[in-house]
Image 1 (cartoon, helix red, strand yellow):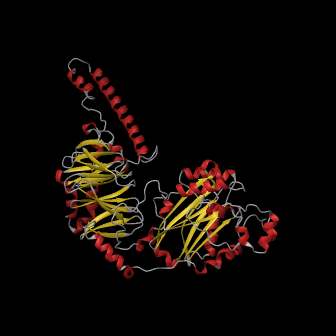
Image 2 (cartoon, one colour; image 1 turned 30 degrees about the horizontal axis):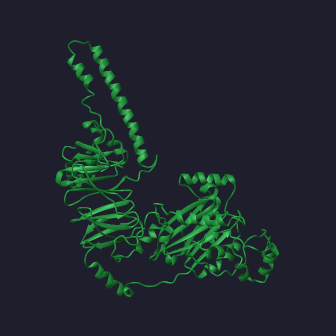
Image 3 (spheres, rainbow, N blue to C red; image 1 turned 30 degrees about the vertical axis):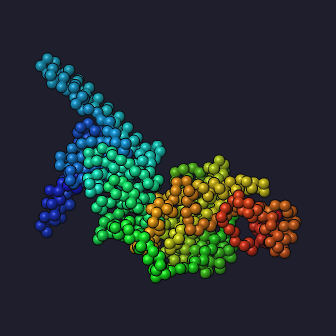
Length: 585
């Protein structure tokens, strides 16, 4: 039989007899095949009262698994499981992820009213019997309504309505020894016996398990962060490696390989003998011949930042800023600050962020205008953007580079008003170019001359808490062709180089570029002195007074990073619509 499950707990069975009949129809009768199968299904909701179970048929079905050797079917919700007899379609057991039997109502107790009615049929009037049956019917309907409401609340809670339970089940498989293995959103692996008894649990990584696959005596585990691990039947870790740079969402066995499918569309094949004694030898040989199958590409990136002060630039201004500079670059990164401000806008932006919405009409205007300057669609193509209140970051890549760009993700960190409002903060964009991960972070830190420590704290908060967690990939189509079929194991230690919980995500990138209005000022210099040095283009002397340079040298901010040589005058503070020093305030 074919079993299917859906949201809301619907489980339908399509009997093999109907499928077989549809497949054996004569050519002139085949137009009725779909109708025959469609009408043949059995809805297990009609078996709701079987054994008194109440909740499993109202909980979303996340996975279904066939235990062929025992003729059983497992159905998995977010936080619970059900065990079915595949032959009789009887619900055998309902239990949660802790292995505890799900509460159920003993239906044998409920019909006591009816049994008493039957026992008293000879000594009571029909009106009393009808009243008893009516009472029982009311009790049954009330019970069903209450249980249905409770299960609806449980479903919403499991899906995140009342807090996302990171223990929810994400994957399910059966091993050669008949055991059932499940993987959770918290990285926990559970081993069950065929009767639904929880045996052991294992956790080797804190990342969500996305898929499970078995081959012989091995259990393969695919994680949200792109790592694949291999376990034996006892749950011992045999090895692990970075298989993809995005979530591993599916695995399949074929021709002596385990094939892994990543969220961005890349597919890679891994020999079923991995990990094994030959791995270290193969790694050494591959490393020695790396020049045969790799190439170095030089890439030029233009990163520009502009505090637009709630204004809108003319086309000529944008051309002078980006037009000629972008002529020989592969990637253009633009970070804007104060695209839109004001208490009402900031409050609305904060409210939209809480429900997963972002962006504004003004932000889209800037994206469209910059896109026109870059000849978006012909020469360049925008691969991603993110707006947080007045902060906006966007990345364009040259068309001939698009096929080598993928895994685009975005993030935002508010730093204003209790770390909740985006008048100050950062927006980031992470992208894979060829086989390197790059992060671009557009920041707007605390203002005023004396607020050096607040600016340092803003950077620290952004660096430590910026998390790229958007599930959908903004550049999935382009990334499909960017993954190679074979990837060398990065280390003989299966856990080396893997992200550890608590380590900033930005630290895992191959390159990080911070840009924006950092708001660091010049110390110990008057306005007139500054103008004189600027007019003479004596920037070296001005740099000696730069708060940012002093704080970096003291190790208080942008630790481990370097700033390029400054070849432009200070950008603050100017009067609008007046060019050059005439506009300096």
